[in-house]
Image 1 (tube, helix red, strand yellow):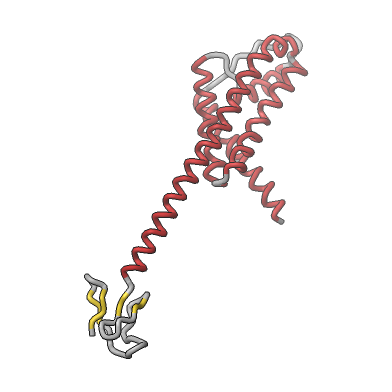
Image 2: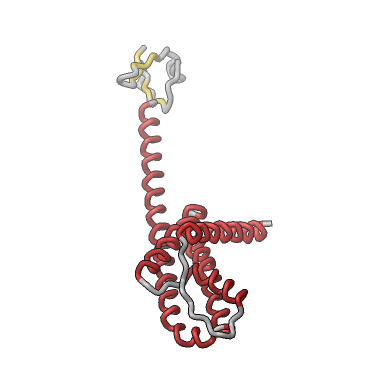
Amino acid sequence: MKLIDFFRSKIILFIIQILILSLFLFYSGYQFSITFDSTVTVSQKRIIQFIANYVLFDNLPGMFFIYFIWFITSLIPIFFHNNLKKAYSMNLMTFFFPNFFVFAFLYNNSRNYFDSNFLQHFLHSLLLGMLIIMVSIGVSLILKKIMKVKTEEQIENLNIIINKIKSKCPKCGTEFNSTPIFCYNCESKIILKAEENVGIK
């Protein structure tokens, strides 16, 4: 059952990330330009073009746009898992799929374009993948640090509250970690002064 849940969460996150990327591409109208070989059919062009828009760029504005949408998308597994290894492995898995298919389709269907542009696109993809890893690790570590500080503050606040409710019997000096009505040691009645948190008879 745990294995099923694991894959289910991976698939759901993958779908969410792809949907967010698709929304960015749709509303921005981003279109990567590919000079296809003459042998490529119209349907093949549409498929390759569709996948290429997720990862490929050939100018500075395109680079900033692709980096931006992947940066935003990379944050989803980080906040979902709150685990460094799971976050960057999920991000790399999502990033791998469009890269693999666009290079495979170009290689099989538009060999001339693939041969002349492979190195450039591969280096771009490599740099983008490194950015995704750095974002995954960096943001995960920052969140972990914030959660640690928050936990320490909660523990400190709890200790302050515990110390505030401590009381002492004014007759026999017995100390309590609460605010009892009667002292179990000498059985005298204890009335606390709220501003001093000390017991008086």
